[in-house]
Length: 317
Image (cartoon, helix red, strand yellow):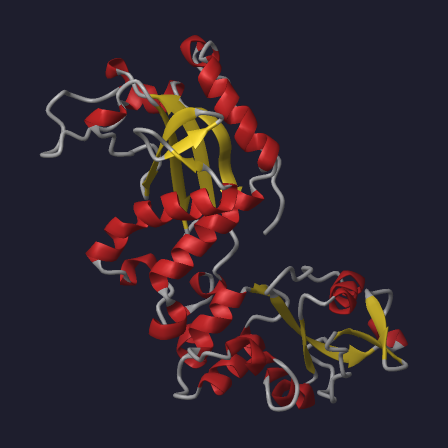
């Protein structure tokens, strides 16, 4: 996931004066100044809910109602694991000895606040897999921040519109979520990828149709729907072998692969990520374009007019 500097927003004077809120804020940002832990925990939550490896699902809309309801619990659990927060006394977490409740919603700012959270700090989290972004902020639950007293049958209430606009101290706002590339592809590409009954063939088609873009481990699992899904990318029968005659290489997390990606001006794959691209031997006709030396030849990103030739072998370590 791309590192993102925290975007801090001015808060209301009452929030600024809240020393406990400032302490919790400082603890979280000292551990995760760029939101990497947060983003990975949220990515893990979506992947666990969708369970693409066993279901082939990759859209939030495909989840059952009960699964969507469970999202908040998974966010709470995955954030606690990522940050190693202690259990709270009355709320979810104890951060620097301060009780903090954790709330998640698919609608930004529309967290359901229970009566027992009154007076406590709340960590409000929002994420959208479709939009590829997430946000997290802190606020203290007070009566003036909440909607009418009745609430729902459990007594839970939302923040008022005014509270959402002025009383949340944002830690991160619209930070990037590791991309689910299946949500970005045209339907014709999705249909082509999932047309085969065989996971290996689906992976081949995935890498044909996502060239120059990062493909995450979870996407590979969703397309392959096999226990050993990452092995299906490798040589010796995997997608690297199958696509080599088409001139396509699949770069992974190895440092040597990352160096190739940088030299070619491609996105650099991180842990568990892959980037495919069709290569051609560089000639003077290509001009001054990014290129890289592999197996004694100079290669560049192929143009549509370039003939397909066997791609160079990549080191697998």
